[in-house]
Image 1 (tube, helix red, strand yellow):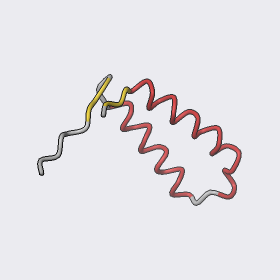
Image 2: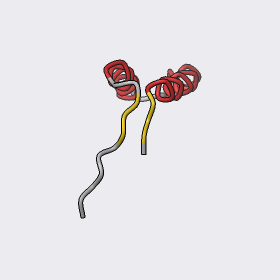
Image 3: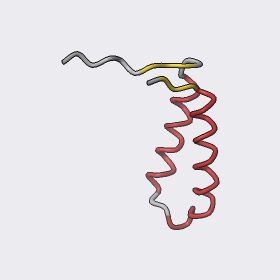
Image 4: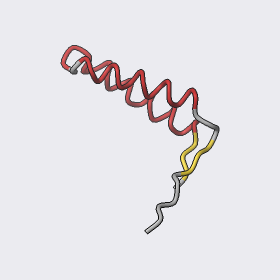
Amino acid sequence: MSVGRKAGTSEARAHEEQFDVFFDRLPKEFIFERELLRSRLWRSPEKWELAHEAH
């Protein structure tokens, strides 16, 4: 499975719209998690893949 930074950023923006709607009812930790996600996306490579698990 691979994930692109552009797709991740688009997904985060979609979440942002919902956060704006429910802002006053969300636990503050949700806001912190959103900021951490933004930071991870900003630092991520253009496209990354999950490591294959050895069984």
